[in-house]
Image 1 (cartoon, protein in one colour):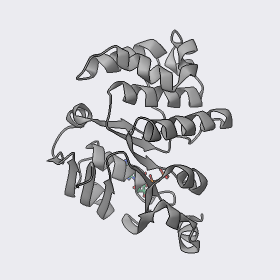
Image 2 (cartoon, helix red, strand yellow; image 1 turned 135 degrees about the horizontal axis):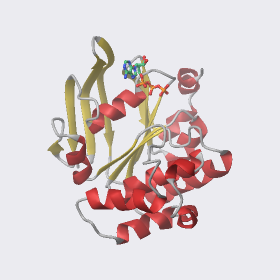
Image 3 (cartoon, helix red, strand yellow; image 1 turned 45 degrees about the vertical axis):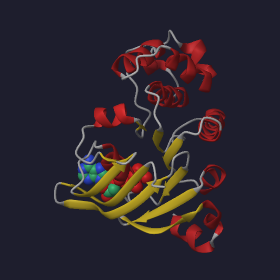
Length: 234
Ligand SMILES: Nc1ncnc2c1ncn2[C@@H]1O[C@H](COP(=O)(O)OP(=O)(O)OP(=O)(O)O)[C@@H](O)[C@H]1O
């Protein structure tokens, strides 16, 4: 059986500065793949290229058997790719409720129950529905950003360092939510995460990027290796 997401030979650049050189990564249906690597190796660039935010210079992105490489971002979202970029992006002037509604309006299914389902994942947001997103804490904004992606009812959730800059009390909630979505709802996840402990707890498989190339990949059990720890050491 082929994977839900299959990325092959992906290359990307900012102008003449090449950043990715032929990256392969796959996420099985219901799998959780962790992309790891030191700062600046190209992890965010990889997610942006997979999602079409940054058009790749070479390579292919296949989602659910369809080549989506040339499609705009919103078409990928319609097909079931949900993206939560780094830095917990929300509409700061809109309330929590309106952030979710705007996303629902833009989604293909327009089923209001999707908002309820997303709020079940992050119950803390239920008490904040009338508050402007810009007034939420970093951790609450990250929960809202993930909830927005969930409103589109993705089959694959792409998360860029979801616990970065988040207060410790909310890190555990976000981790638990990702784990539940993956294990109970069978959502496939492509996760960029720098922290080995979190990756060890959540991932089935991993790839490590170094200098824009995959230098190591394997099942999560291999993350215990000395070599892997060395590759991730700052
Ligand atoms: N918009 C941009 N224009 C030019 N160069 C960029 C841009 N964004 C990133 N880069 C460069 O591309 C390289 C890879 O950056 P990227 O953000 O993908 O790395 P990363 O692994 O996600 O790092 P971090 O963990 O710090 O987010 C870095 O050298 C970075 O300086």
